[in-house]
Image (cartoon, rainbow, N blue to C red; front, side, top):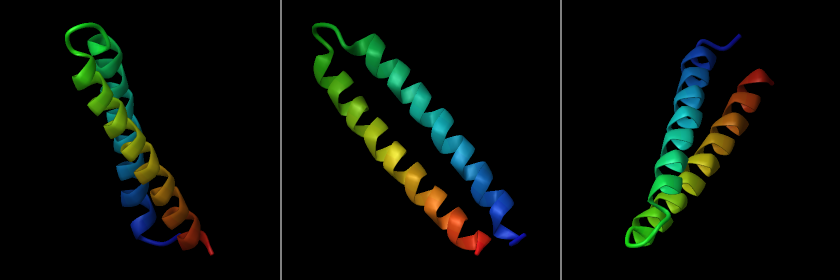
Length: 64
């Protein structure tokens, strides 16, 4: 196993947990007058999920 896998796996876990927290905050704020903040948080959530998928690809490349 590549030595960086454990650290990257930990980062992946942190990204997923952060995404869940941001989503929960967005859902709480998705009412007037804070819908703009909620929309911004949902955009952050999408970026975090994208980062998580990219990290998964990096982890997969280290398996090879």
